[in-house]
Length: 548
Image 1 (spheres, rainbow, N blue to C red):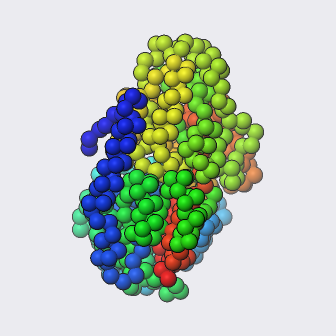
Image 2: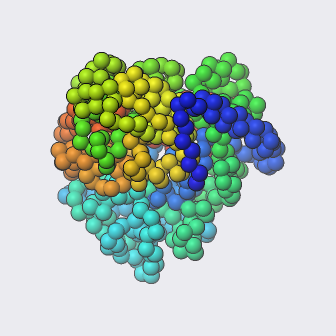
């Protein structure tokens, strides 16, 4: 992948050229052909970037999961517009009194898209393949699971190897998970994308290529992937749930990187739903009689973090706080989110239980930042040298324009003498390189949309670097790690609430990350789009959607 580094002196010009190039490419490609060339009842979803891969066990990005949401299914489902749990591929479940055994009773008569049967062995295979030490029991004849070729990042970051002791198919449609420890969010975790059930037969045909040819039980089947252009799904005519959809013949996920171009495609009717429009385009959408707005408070956080694997960021708390006080977060929210964001105090959304209202957040205070910078050993930035500020290349629910936000942050840091160079990559490379914690990364933007409505899914998965090398922040704090362990193994929610409030206070005191904003998710759509519902987890569900 080609790396490109953007210097402040040329960044606006570079961006303008890049966006102009996107527009030209879009025009030359003849985007109107997308709908004209497809037959039947087709939904075209315009998104900001392509998927990285389509094997849910190994991906971490929303652009991958939104496709997986329609191809695969998990044992438990989240209800529409909430994180309440419902039966999924499991009709029911029982939990032992000691909280260590979960027995799932599976649906019968469900088929994978390749015609093979969904059963207990498929569950053992799908979840068991992520285990480091595979303590698995199939019912009758099972499969030899190949060695993993890459790290199942969600599994590792959530410490699932320390949670699940064994998985046993006790019958053709019964699976028992025996846990090593009580895990309060375990059932909610089993509704997440990483726990989707795949076709073992399809996977074993070519394990390395499964991420490009996914086979699940969902309402839509994978058809075609044109890299950086579109992914096409077709209706699963044999879908097991006969109570409703799927109603659409096809769903096309189009990649349109530039926000304004994507919104123009909506205005001209070439796409049906526009993900992540520019805030300024929302007002235009409100005035258009052919467009409606779908909105929901975001269960998300956009943040700036430090490379905690290198000095001085690893141990210099005053330096981290100097950066926090130097950034005018309110101006970023006001000017870039433009009414679609809320200034963040905690790295979990204020609608989530465990939120700590007592945490004040970092005010914008240049003089305090200068004072802390001097106390940290870098008066007016001397001795620190030029640092890098990695900025996201694609819009996400929690960050409408990473490069623009990076420019604003860099300008703020310059006021205290810290010179920050903006660095970005294509999305897949950005995620891969950031995970490697390279020495040429100092500060980086990332964010998160919650998977299951539990604070553990934010606070442990994002920030407990002591739990796993896969945690992207790699902040290692023994006190924080102990709080995360207590949060997982404590059942009483009132006690868990206090644990997470203490953890949020510690994050404020130590400043391992700087919380920027929680966004309000607003997606414009054509008026004829019926029953499309935004979900707090960021899932894009097409099963019940109709075009009228």
